[in-house]
Length: 477
Image (cartoon, helix red, strand yellow):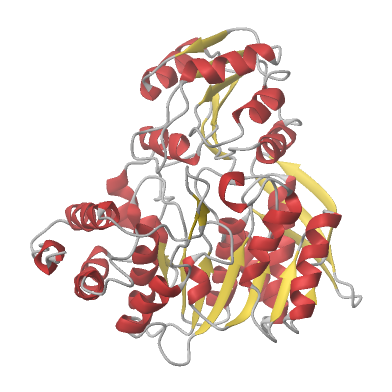
């Protein structure tokens, strides 16, 4: 491969921040499109096992870039659900303790800047641009190394965060895994001072396995030899896998505190935490609603204690953490809620989360990528919804969208009435809002990418970039 094909993106100092980010994203997408080996072993159509590079390609990239920097402490966060929320709560807690902290998130919903959290805000475009030029040089070098080849989009975005953290002299790196654990690029960054495992469910079964035990086994691959791991897993099969791997690697296994006296409201969750050693913290809260967010907060609190953080630092970190499209209310009269639920478990958590809210009719705008459990979501949503609009996620989603009529048919087979299909997601949203009355609740869900795209109606990418936050002042109620 000619190395000049990987020339760095042209990023003049005069570019507006949003234009810099767009050019960086175009470069990363082009890099991802170059031929490369699949990152994990798979069975091809001939029934032959094809070996992927595993972690070796990611490790080579980070070796060339000399990241992470010396003295940086790494925290891994893996799981099926709750990774992003738990990671941000931990990052905010570390920040409150005075630790210079960076955090990596995926996927991004509205702007690529959402992947890069550095010292309390999204990274500035200029910093991202400088690091992208350094990344391009490393990618060009790897393109000339046949045993590795150019890095993937995910490997490259993680590299950008690591470069930014080094430049900003961060002490802690909180890394949310993308998919699985054993072969996830974040597992090439370490050893970790703490591994955090959130809840595990059936997702990405084509890659991770079709049982809870198999998926837990893959995610347990993140556990550091003779390290420490904290897990909120309750499934016996998943728990057995986590315990087996932790024991085999001589890692200490810890449990999070119990969530007690839970009070769920539209503006968040309020609860107490009870630790196994008898310590009790009362009056905790998170701005993200739902039982699952209270459980994520408990996991983050337990992790924070293991890292030596105090109650007040953790209390502030949990309360201040907020991510878009996690049961996010963006409008009243009618209420409009954005959520990224994309499997049965997450759909159930969403329905349970709004079950105590006051509204008349429930209107869904639904879209999914084609490898998700749309039938499971349909079985959860059909009994509670009054009106349904099925549509497609945006083309920027990493996998093809599920045909709206397929989702509609699954809803009708599950007993739903009032189902309508719209190819255009914005048209589906407009129709839902036009039909909804003031006391109705409109939920946009089924895909993080759908929710993130339609969130632009209320929060523009420009405002996110300008403010360094997914929640710019005065942008949302």
